[in-house]
Image (cartoon, rainbow, N blue to C red; front, top):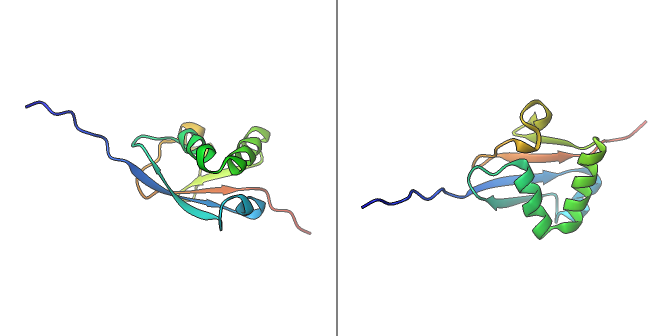
Length: 100
């Protein structure tokens, strides 16, 4: 019998910092995605569940001031929004921090 292997879903932890926390119920949540999902796919999933946050994230990415880290590594040095996520990965969205 020829059965097609089903790709398992993955669960990633999403953390947001700074002023973005207000849009994301405490700043940390887990998100379920399909296997082989990317940062871009994660942004789309967030748009479905937290549209206000997704809009702010997209604006920050387009303006070039938002840092996205996967397991502590900036996606700029990986594959950008095409960075593939794995089960139990941690994704952090870091807006710029000002001070004096």
